[in-house]
Length: 242
Image (cartoon, rainbow, N blue to C red; front, side, top):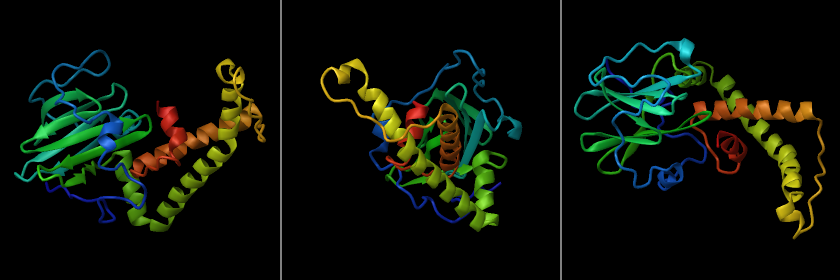
């Protein structure tokens, strides 16, 4: 089975701020040695070496995801991501090779696959060639990322609208929640004893703040599914992910 090397829109990157070349350091991958061995400390057991790749069950979409890419030697690399355990497993031609805690770097011949995830989805899932050229792996059928890509391909207008709504939600959250957070921080003793406290012009009821937080979480998921990331725009959901 041939595995496409690009997303359904024909691009490897999206029209948004991306993790730059130094992003590996931000994700903890800078200088990371290859990870492997037994990382099965609780949670889902680590597959045995050579174990077959299990079918992907859409019912587990909130817990797992999966990506694949055709390698230069003609084999297929598949990365199965377990969000609950924070581990990623590499399969080659449907057979388990190794499992590692994320962020992880899997060698595949002269190339490598780099994997990093946040609470909301994947931050990085790239095949990096020996020449430094990189491309993102493709989401496997049935995964949330694949379904989101299908939405944009089949209904591009709806896909763009959903992406725009996510941006609006995050902008509103930054405008409304950030002043309230700043007020709380500046009333803490370590600040208040030295500097004037900030008084937020926004004072929302608890239910409104809860609703905004939930909306921001959904927006964060949407942007993770489409691999969009902006350091300022996604600062709030990055904080939630931490």
